[in-house]
Length: 164
Image 1 (cartoon, helix red, strand yellow):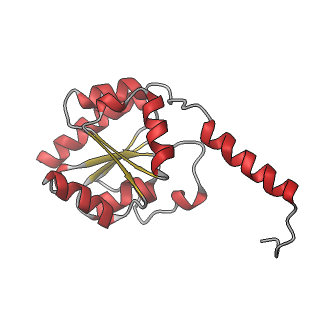
Image 2 (tube, helix red, strand yellow):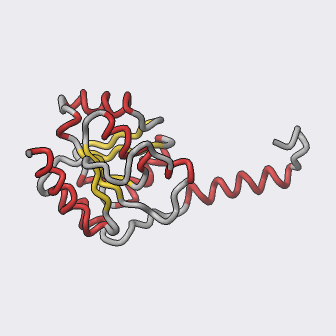
Image 3 (cartoon, one colour):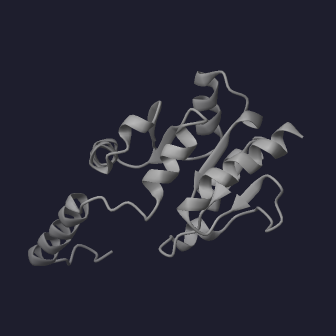
């Protein structure tokens, strides 16, 4: 970006910024623990997250939620091929899978395109890139929720739709 004209001081500041991001404590959204517990009481719950393996492992451990997940998948990309691989390892057809997430583009759309279901919980801090999606607002395979406390009911609602 700088054509080689970046100072050692600026590089040091960038490295320190990166370190602070990696060391930032995990802060769960209000109601997330209860939501995961509620869904896990009725369904097998798998965490599928994208990012650096060591950083994500650390975040999961710090969250105090790891014991609620039957499996934790840290992937380099959330796309249909990744979801098909994970579902295939469970022997689970997409029509019997619901993804809960804040990104329509990475969490929900790939699963819906495969024939699965999605619970979208928008978050006020989301990359603009993740806001773009090919899903319509009236997509019947997606339920939007405004708070974590609504997730379990949304998953149950999708279960009823899938059974119909």
